[in-house]
Length: 370
Image (cartoon, rainbow, N blue to C red; front, top):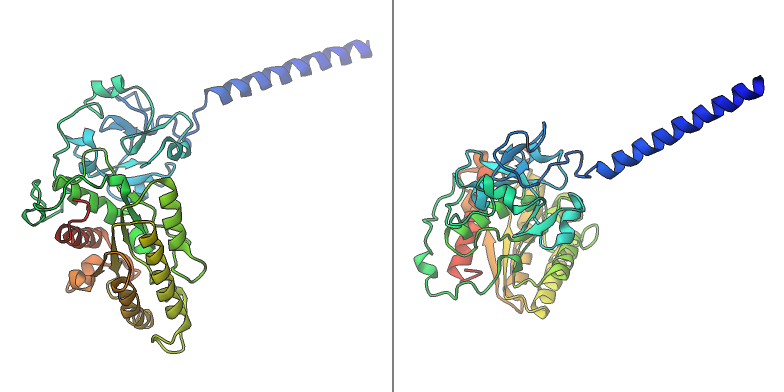
């Protein structure tokens, strides 16, 4: 009798284990690994149920509307992208959407294995679904104006750039590298793309490649972070134009007995900038726009930045390729309370917009990627 009971218990246990394994297997097969949101960046129509409970169908894709990057932090690799940069957002009331940019399909595996790179952004699902909602299959929106606060962009090519060779540099051959001044929100690149679209220099769906980083972003201190960004960028695709900053992390984290050219930290940063520009020249980069910082709030950091500025400017001036120096102090003068975050280092949204406009002016004046 005891033996029979044990046999029955074993049979029931085996059945329960088999059922549990089958259920887990089905769940695994049905799951779509998109950081917890199975619909993220899947094309959608106007049906509010299309995107599930957590996301919305905005601009023909399942995502979230946003005004800052914070809104997108729960979504894999997502940034807050201005709706003026998305072809399907002609009539959108949202200032931005959470999106993931890409150059090749492999860039989209961070979202899911089923996502593909489509005109510079990661997407999944059929085009037919998006057509029903007037999304990425639509046309005629490439002439959309820049972001709501943008100025100086009329939608027509700038008169000063009329003699430039137009369309010779694809957007994905413009590479952005640097430290937290660019990477804290990546909005400088977003606003710069909006300026370029308004001028007709970048078509709808095209993106600059922003590889700036919050980590490993020194010129020399702590390794060659910015040089590594460049190396990784050109491994992905050719770069004809490089927009960069560099030296801020070295001055912030390094220390000097005296804040002048004799400081080893500053000398090493300037030498690293010189070496990187030489590498770019050897790689046949056509133009570099070297963006240097507005004044930091901390007096000690500012002294080191002031000492580094002429060293890096000299490296730019003597480079074996056109290196265009942009000192942002003039653009920020009188607006620091509005343009700089509470950390006294990195730009606010308004500061990012002002920085992008200053960069675009340099690009227009020198026929860079027009």
